[in-house]
Length: 250
Image (cartoon, rainbow, N blue to C red; front, side, top):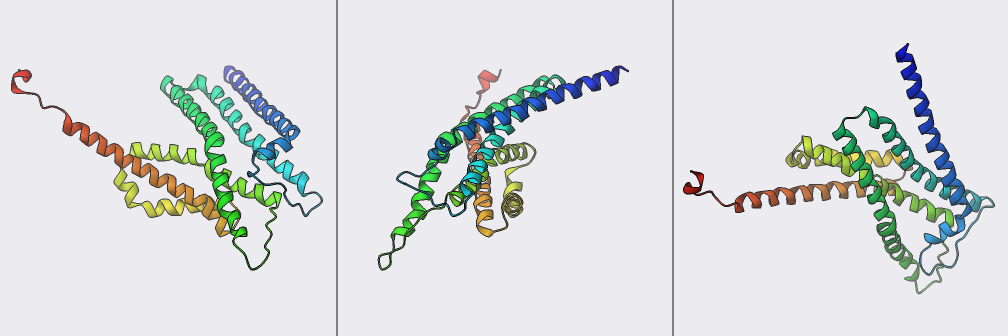
């Protein structure tokens, strides 16, 4: 009887946590949809005066897509926090502390990512690809960007950057239980895994898969490089340690 009561109690608490996450996501969606035009203005390239829309309902569904991406992205963070609060009473002290530190690190990682790195990447990519429309002299080639295509490319870039933090966590776990030489030896398997993940979360075209798979490979190589530098640093520290003299040892 007590087990049934405890199970009902935990189910009720889980329902409460799930309700908080759902209502938080809905509130974020309503807020972003209220300020949808200002939200698109944030991601507009500098110097761009207009976008092209060729469908009657394209602007509406573009707004809907943008607000859905934002609300579900932040709603996922709310759901993870609620899941942590639900599981915290049953965790050991070190498990609770480690999970809390991972959540805090993820929070600061994505804040820095979207405040500093994401706008810079958008600016650089826009300058690179928009410059091709200005290199034609013999003919008049006019570049008129389409709003939905632009946001679709931003969504693909967002996927590539979002999965960066979980990949770093997985690589750090592998670093604990494996060695760097094993990860270097099976580097080809890591590349295949990266493009398999890209094929799973992107449309079936080579460009989208490359935009997702290539950053994962870059994260992998950066992790291996930092791991190598850390090993060299530890070797230099051991070499530079003073040797105890015979008198000090007695």
